[in-house]
Structures are given as structure tokens and as C-alpha cells.
Amino acid sequence: MISDKPPLVLLHGITMSAKAWQDVTPLLEPHRAVVALTALGHRGGAPVARRPARISDLVDDAERALDALGLERAHLAGNSLGGWIAIELARRGRADTVCALSPAGFWEAGATGQTAGVKKLRRMIALTRLTHRMQPLAVHSRLVRRIGMRDIARRADRITPAQVLDAARDLLGCTVIDDLLGNHEQVAPLPELPCPITLAWSAYDAILPVDVNGRIARERIPQAHFEILPGVGHVPMIDDPALVAATILATTGVAAKG
Image 1 (cartoon, rainbow, N blue to C red):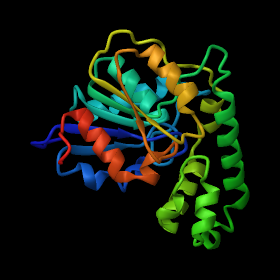
Image 2 (cartoon, one colour):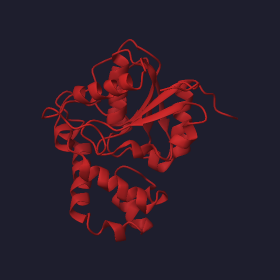
Image 3 (cartoon, rainbow, N blue to C red):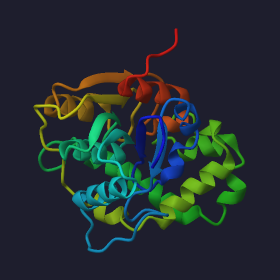
Image 4 (cartoon, one colour):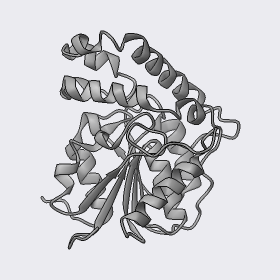
């Protein structure tokens, strides 16, 4: 990877792909050399070598991608599962900064704080599988887009029908859903920061609520900068790409324009 701009690597959430960042990337590219990765076992990513897949397998795969790009370190930004992967890469010394958007992995011992969010994700996955034949027609309705994705976004009506269908194909092509949703691993405490870390939590996160999972994240990574992103759901790239881009750039050291 050759560029005069500092590298920024983007990591998506479970069932998604690099396309999750398509509305954010153009806002980042004037400032950073942006690469969006697709995770192991996800549609377009590398196949899984062992089952069940573990978080460390996805982190290993992301680290191999950094190696292939010739990046010893990079700015990292990730949402949900991608935020978890970014934090683990930072733990391994591979990050200049981390912007974790509602990162997964912050739940109580025994995964009691994971249960509600997993149920909602499983419901969304089951509905997508059940309705995939009728989706090309149904998603032309803004109301259907908004209601169908209400657990992960507040304004899914703002994205196009083609983007919704792409997201559905990503979900249907993900081979590690059951592995990861049945996984009770969690983010271990990180009392000393290996690099600057921002935990940016969606104010209306219905999967990992800020008052539950955000609280645990602040306890486990107490020195991280913590902020709440107004008006957005669990996947804030859907609701407000400009807010997401500004949050990431601020973490990497790009000052917001007044």
C-alpha cells in the first residue's frame, strides 16, 4: 500500500462486509488512505479453516491483511464486531489509533448482557432468510426498509434498495453467524492504552445499549475517550455517515472544520 496519506483500515460488524462503509469512505478519503476489509467467514472474506470460529481467528485474519498491505500499524475504525477486532489488534500493537463504534464483546461474565442483543440479531437473520425471495420488490418501500432494519438503524429508509439487498446477500453469505453469536468470549480489560482509543457509542443502540454495554466498556477500558453519538442506531454508518466520518477522523487527529 503506497500513499502519502496515513492509512486507515475499516472493520465491519457481524453478517456485513466491506460495503458497510460505502457511504463513509468518500468522506474519509480526502484525509486518509482508506482500506475497508471483509472479515473471515463473511461474504467476500477468507474462508474459515476451523470450526467453530473464534474471535481470535478473525483477529488473526485481519492481522494477515495488514501484513499483506505492508502495514505494521494503521489507524483502525470498526463497528460492533469490527470494533472488537480493532481493539484486539491494538492490544497486539498494530494500531496507531482505534475508533470503536458500539464495539461488541463488552458484556458481563456469563454473557447475560449479550442475550437481548443476540435475540434481536437472530430474529433479523431469520426474517432475512425467510423473506429473501420477496425482498427485491419489498425493499423499494422506504417504510419496509426502515421497519425491517429497525434493530440496527433508525433511518434505514435513507439508504437505497440496492444497499439493503447487498446487506441481505452479505447476511445470507456469512458462514460464521452461529459460531459468533453462540460465542461467550468477551473483551478483556485494557487498563493501559496501547494507543489512543475512542469508544463512540450509538445513543439509540438497540443491540448493545449504551447504559449496559457502554458502561461495561468504560469499566474495562477506563482510559479510553468515551462519547455518545446522537441520533443513531447500532450501525451508525446507515443513519449518519457524516457523523461517523467526523468521529473517525477526529480520533485519527484530523480537526473538525468550524
